[in-house]
Image (cartoon, rainbow, N blue to C red):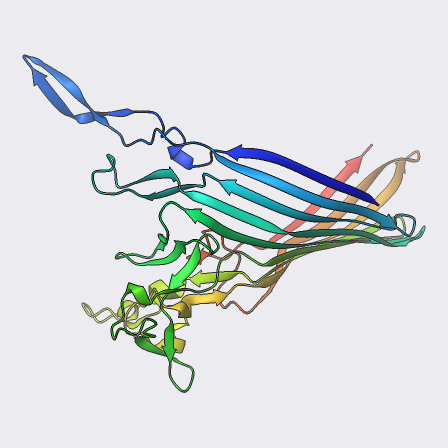
Length: 364
């Protein structure tokens, strides 16, 4: 057994094109000029800036345990961690006359992430003609916004002033902020009907509520590899994500009658099959109906190899191998892939490629 403890502080400035925003800068116009006598001078326009902008700082604590037993046939690590991030960077709207633009980067608050990580390495079988190893890891993570300069910052724009995500104190970043859908007795969503959560008799943005989050509660990985005799090797890698939710922007944008039937020329357009579940007459993008369980199990890779040894005077080897990537997805999510990287919004109508490989490794 070995007990570990650590504390450290890191910083990051990843704010994209805004990373030099604390400088006062100007842009020279290529079309606007000012005439002074017979000379025309290019006009320089001042850009918005934030001279108070600074790096995020993350203070991280870790308590860990390394262990091994059965002559180190089973080894592993168990870690408890907490990361407290202040001066959180984000691009947010700026008030009227506040700056020379309408949005820009700010240090907006404090974020806390805490959880547990477990890693196991098991040498299950170790014989001359057969070996079998397993690797397993699991992480539970909870992330919450602790402080915000301005609470309830709209995120996840879906057009025409609509937003389906938010930054709000006490919730995860990009938590879904939506209307609560009303259903009929058969469980079918009623077109345009939402719950009046504040009981004021009208449906407004005040009736929206926080419903689920894009971050997974638990992520897991599992890998196994085996050798048979001196020639055959096999490996496969699995991954799982539990508790993550996805905003189905594909259906929200397209699965409605106004998109399917063109009233101008009377033509019919393609639409997601989800329309058969809703029959919505128009887009209802801010409904919680489109926030769907994105938990999944994936078989990422399978590889099989065969090695020819001692080819040249007891030296050298050639290994032939074949493999498949993106093999299998097990999920309740009905679109192509629940693993999305756009803060939990799925707008992709193109499948992720399944790749087949065939290769040779030669050693002399």
